[in-house]
Length: 312
Image (cartoon, rainbow, N blue to C red):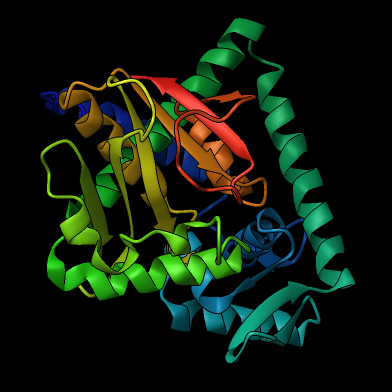
């Protein structure tokens, strides 16, 4: 994490004041979105479904929206009554319900976007191009700070322990199956898989888990790149359960790994992934990884057809 900066009382008051003005100007104190007849919660749920390709489980939606499952379930029920959403059983787990949008829901979402885009465009007309970029960057920085503060408050990132082996192994296997990378040439074939704590003793490699006080949600680590230069490490087995994605936890975990790798003296970090992991690849690019055409080292992961590297 970056060094914590002292915060002045005046800074807090100013940011709170601006935040209140945002809430009021955007009409977020009103429960109903006047232009579409939908509640603010329903708008957010439709947008999150669209972001996830049109379908998601109740747990995934609850995690992404930072709400409890019962609240999201009630919102989904009200939207099913309006025929905006549909429920289906997950083909791989019949206990898991998948939420999807109907054509009526898609039309409501189109109206939400149209109204929201128009209101933002109206405001941006009053700003110069330079001011617009400043606003976008400032909002992004503030949202990121809020996200990091929440992550530090609600989650813990710590070195793996032997007692964590079974949980993290199950997560790696589960996510590998989800993205079709299990079996020979994938991470589940690595001999370290069942004894992750012992495979990362901390001398020149570490593995971390992220937990919410109740269970482990994922993990990531680094180690010297086999067959690579001494100054290059490899990002190893970064996986999160589906319910934990979209909340900034992956970014927090990745940032922590890179900071620790830098502290160990590594100058570059290399990773391999698959095109199917679109969100992960977007995150890697966001933090400064660049795609490279050729494999480096001897990872043995033939199922991973994409390579990235970052200078630390």
